[in-house]
Image 1: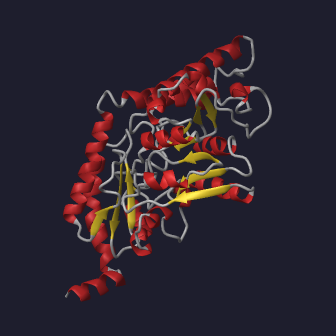
Image 2: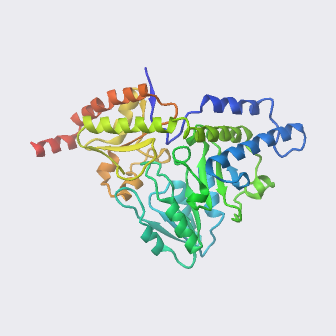
Image 3: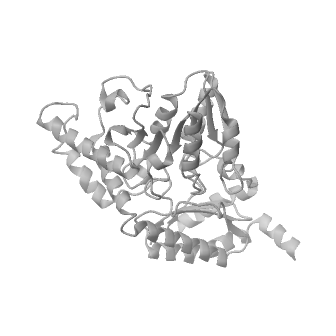
Length: 389
């Protein structure tokens, strides 16, 4: 069976060049990067080279990059590392659970949190952000790109507002890295999170950009690793892989691969909307990452479509992988004003560097008929057909 993977916002496959780069650090180059002998210095050099590559992707200094176990840890370190009881935090209602649940925990620890709403396109209101700032506001944490819709927040404007108010600004850029150009200085952020497995590196490695002069309280205590910001022996193979993936992500803006992915995404949207009625793109009018589209198909259950497409060799999702299995509709889509019924009928298609036009052909040859078949057995669709008739 031909298979096509369109769930790259959940995780991306390891690219061959990334696997090749990390392979030696499982075998011959196995030293602890904190050791002063040959084996340790060999791996230390690899870690620092990777740090430079990640910094280059983000427009940062190498000394400002802290390696973590992934995006969740990076988000947690950014927030817990700055905020103390009595502080006020501003975030949005559409953040990833790594930020939302961290903020909810802060509320149990004597902190105040403001959750900014979004409009029907998934964007925060900058005037509401300004009004939300208080004398005790310590941090603004707003994601760069939404993991479900791909909608891009106006991070540079948020950065300017934060700077004017002398408030720290953290952005979860886990879904933005490698898809849109990132320059931490242009964005005006003090902290920025990325995750390896969203840019074709392995799961279990990520990074946090920490602007020079930003003092973080560590979450882990132990050795003096990562300039005392994150204790623990470095995951050298993972870090090397993240560095290589960062190099390839930056190259993607020059070699046309980002544009190619965007063209495939646009083809999917255009064809699906032409061939299927009662369908539409969530966040269609907002700027979005080029690899992501979130489409609703009224009168069906999204989970049923996921299963039906999987049986035909196509992997898609109804939203964030960390929320898989929940019976609740997407908190992102509900925050955008969708009804629970339409939110449950929405599907995320997210592309990666490995996707081809043949994959898109398979998707477009399969989705319309599958949606039609599910609607045939849908009591909701039958009721709607009777109304129209």
